[in-house]
Amino acid sequence: MLPRALWLSCLLAVARAQSEETTATPSETITAQDGVPTSLDVTYASISTTITLLPTAGSLSPTTASNGNGTALSTASGSQTTEDVTLIVGGQTTLSSNGTMTSSGATSRTSTSAAPVNTQPCNGHVEFCERKYSNITYVAAHNSPFSRPGNAASNQLLPVTSQLNDGIRMLQSQSHFVNNTLYLCHTSCDILNAGTLEDYLRTVTLWVEDHPFDILTILLGNSDLVSVDNYIAPIQNSGLWPYLYTPPTIPLSLPNWPTLSSMILRQKRVVLFMDYMANQTAVPYILDEFLHIWETPFSPTDPTFPCTVERPPELPEEQARESLMYMANHNLNTGLTFLGNEILVPNVARINQTNAVEGPGSLGAMAEDCTDLWGRPPNFLLVDFYDAGSGSVFEVAAELNGVAYDLECCGLIEPAAQAPRRPGVLLAAMVAGVAALLC
Ligand SMILES: *[C@@H]1O[C@H](CO)[C@@H](O)[C@H](O)[C@H]1NC(C)=O
Ligand SMILES: *[C@@H]1O[C@H](CO)[C@@H](O)[C@H](O)[C@H]1NC(C)=O
Ligand SMILES: *[C@@H]1O[C@H](CO)[C@@H](O)[C@H](O)[C@H]1NC(C)=O
Ligand SMILES: *[C@@H]1O[C@H](CO)[C@@H](O)[C@H](O)[C@H]1NC(C)=O
Ligand SMILES: *[C@@H]1O[C@H](CO)[C@@H](O)[C@H](O)[C@H]1NC(C)=O
Ligand SMILES: *[C@@H]1O[C@H](CO)[C@@H](O)[C@H](O)[C@H]1NC(C)=O
Image 1 (cartoon, rainbow, N blue to C red):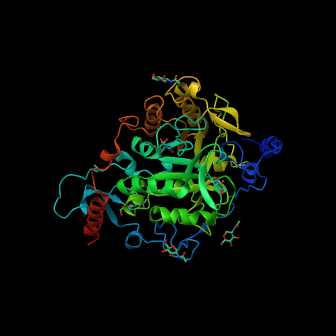
Image 2 (cartoon, rainbow, N blue to C red):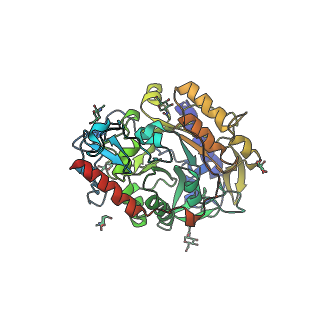
Image 3 (tube, rainbow, N blue to C red):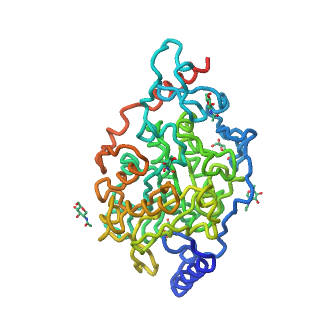
């Protein structure tokens, strides 16, 4: 783990480097490499107490949470279910709301023979339905919006809809507050401006609506350290808000995350984290990243990719092992001075090796190191150009998850062919299934 003194001196070094820039504008003085703020005002909450947001801990129903403008969150179907009600996923099988498979007895009044078998995949795999959100390895697109052809500051080749079609299940980004609007920009909006946060979230929401059995994570960098209130409008206006998962406690510890099936049944399928300035008491659906996830060194230029805790600094080892999920930053960078900004850009010359299943500096090798060190694989594998290696990053994740690797990759799914099923119809069927069982 990086000691606090070292951490601060890193920040100071970057801050000093920036203060030598004579042409820096206000937004440039505060953000540094990869959107991580250089300001010394960044604070990390500690896990000294757990706040319960809801009357019944463990309930998934976000009924009492206030959203910052005083409106209660949607209750979805959560309030109609209890821990011992048997639920159905996709009309095929029964899963208890506590995540366990139930025996065939309660599942159907007409069939008395075979035990039910779930055929509806959750996030692409039937096996995942029963697993907790915190017990899965997801492939994460580093700087997901930055897919601008010909721009050296791009981190991805394929746009966000392709990323999602191909199996990316965490979208990471940095956001900057310019002209009173949140934009997705790489370090500075002069370098690469991918448009507004709201437009990006609108695109993501369309995909979420079309894929009712998929769980998605969004990790937003608040690079200018603006108040979390500024994020409410883009989230609500984009249509994403009804899908956001609100945990029952602050923080939600590693073993306490719900199963994918229970999140799907309630259609609370998007988990949104923010690195700095989250305040879950004020805005309960924007989760404080560093209360829930620790990260290995960010934007590394070191191809050995040590699996050490960098952020949050001074995280007790016991918490790193037992309370938080963790993210492997597996993107190799080179430094570049661009329009007066020091920025880190992907080392494209080594991308095939970096994203490979095995070999020195590969994603597979880092995942193996991490698993040896921490006793469980990373939850999030943060990569650049996820398509490089023709799906190798997904092969690594499948191996860690113990499921078959059967993906067509990458960018091959045409947008028109992505959603043959109407989500409204599917949802209606699902809800009908649940309702039938509750009768
Ligand atoms: C609060 O958010 C809800 C849900 O989007 C919206 O309908 C309502 O108009 C908002 N209220 C105010 C005062 O902004
Ligand atoms: C989960 O629910 C099932 C079905 O109601 C029940 O049999 C089982 O004991 C529960 N498991 C736990 C851990 O609460
Ligand atoms: C999930 O749990 C299984 C069984 O304990 C374990 O083998 C696997 O490594 C875990 N995966 C993650 C990402 O925690
Ligand atoms: C912010 O406003 C200024 C002045 O109108 C304009 O030059 C600049 O391009 C705007 N920035 C963004 C990111 O739109
Ligand atoms: C978080 O929001 C709550 C409720 O609005 C407020 O009382 C508290 O001071 C805020 N915490 C921080 C650290 O700003
Ligand atoms: C990566 O590998 C692919 C397929 O083997 C090859 O076409 C491509 O040129 C390689 N890219 C680099 C940067 O070496």
